[in-house]
Image (cartoon, rainbow, N blue to C red; front, side, top):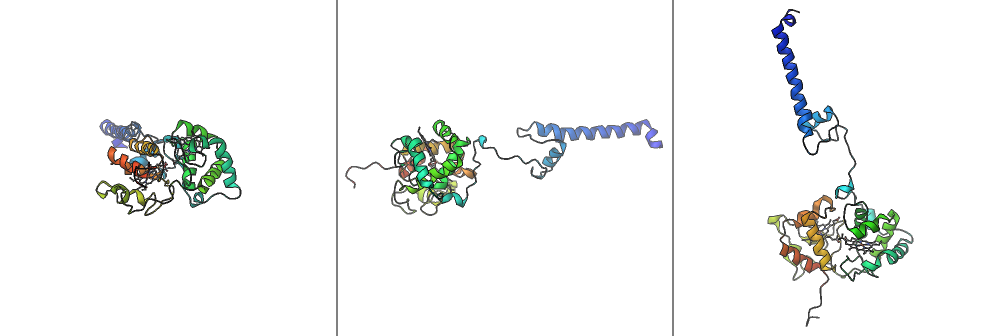
Length: 267
Ligand code: HEC
Ligand code: HEC
């Protein structure tokens, strides 16, 4: 071929090829590799990433890891029903041996641990799995949950569900004296009212019963969601609610839901 034997032509073609190879390397290998989330296995993945394809298509599906501090529990309707057979009795036996010293003989904590009496079963199940797998941290609870089997967790949830709730009535959407954030939220700051998930207007699956909890406990959890120290709430539901709130607002909603101290002269 005449053109190929011409050294100028040869040089410019080889130059173009080299330039193209260099650009591909920079664009698909070097640039993506300096991103913190670089996970591509080979150039094909890089090309798919660069073209904006979801990583599932390129075959790189990794199972979610709970150790990242977020939950991997998927809530199902089954979890909202107590276990069959002697589930409650077996749960009571484990509770007396391992839980009542902190959560109270009848699931009503004398200290600042959360009440478990009447807590929704799917909440107890989810939280115990989250402690067990490190998605929610607490030195005590992680150690204790590690030793519980799935059946133990189910039975404990059935037992606590069978006990009367701390305060018989849910906070209602229109309860007099309820802070505005509890009743109507704040649409301008995207704060959804507490009663639309925690009961009052609606109870969403996996949302804990708060009424009558120790104030210190409620405060510590709200602060944990605000700082991100607690981040096992699915879809960041609580973190989104709490982040725009001021310290005073957090304090007043905690006080409202908490076990209320008797006020002198009022019966
Ligand atoms: C040494 C005291 C202690 C013991 C014993 C203990 N807990 Fe706890 N538990 C706590 C504390 C404190 C918390 C709150 C920790 C936090 O801040 O996350 C907690 C949290 C929980 C929660 C989360 C509740 C919620 O509303 O989110 C569940 C569920 C729970 N414990 C169940 C149990 C069960 C079941 C047992 C027995 C197998 C048990 N705990 C034994 C102290 C204890
Ligand atoms: C969009 C629904 C939603 C709204 C609105 C919401 N919450 Fe929650 N909240 C949740 C869910 C879900 C959880 C359980 C998170 C988990 O799985 O760990 C939770 C957990 C909590 C906890 C921790 C309780 C425990 O025992 O672990 C507190 C305290 C709390 N919410 C208070 C509030 C307050 C106060 C408001 C209103 C200012 C509010 N929440 C509004 C969904 C909501």
